[in-house]
Length: 285
Image (cartoon, rainbow, N blue to C red; front, side, top):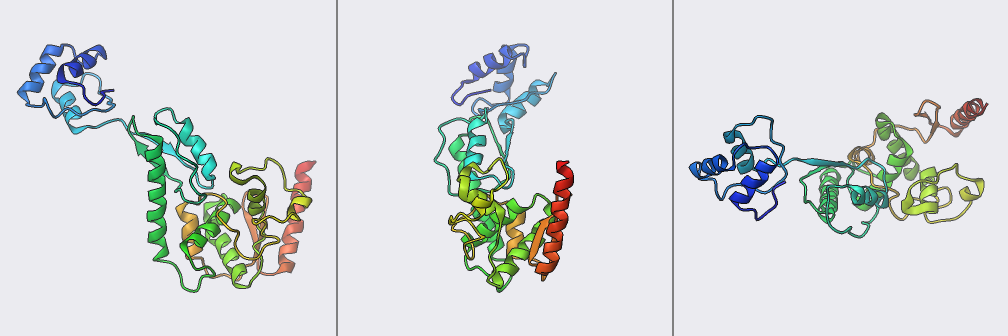
């Protein structure tokens, strides 16, 4: 690691101590010969074994610092994302305030040692804004919501309803169809968010009493969308709600394989629910 402000002699001493060069004086001579005194950049470098002096100078002049990565999975709340940022051992600096739910883009972010936590969070916010602006301009016509913020709310519900990537458009279509028919969304993840908020996970099945408990996020009892997102959705979920496929499906339930069974009518759905309950009973044996 070469910190900002190091002089050429200090850099030579640091490289010598790390075993990268065999003779600091030869390195200094090479720097002068190549007129690189002011061109060596600070950073964290990985120098190949037995690298020549020319190769080492080239790496330091180009500033090819080691890139570290932080991966933010889809569907985490802002509070959960902040825990990942705080725990990263390479990032430095104080933690920013927890951003609004749904304002961060789940993605893999690259950075060099010395990057601050505030910088990474700002990068996540900017990426989310850019993504939403791009996709909003390409949205389908006659969607049952009017603003980008409402799109993020619905996308966050889609994100939490399925972990199967191929199902996202179909789940989105069900919710869009229900909104178009003024049917309640009846989404379990919204109930959970109403109970635990940014902590994200309930850690147990939802109780009957909780299904009947009125919160702004209980979409079994509240018409339309909840007041805000319930997580930070990924790009695919946002794309799904802004351009859902044309279907007449209105229901879905777990099918026991990790995915869902979709239905057009309540009668079909009730049969799927009975099948799912039978699977649960068999698992409990």
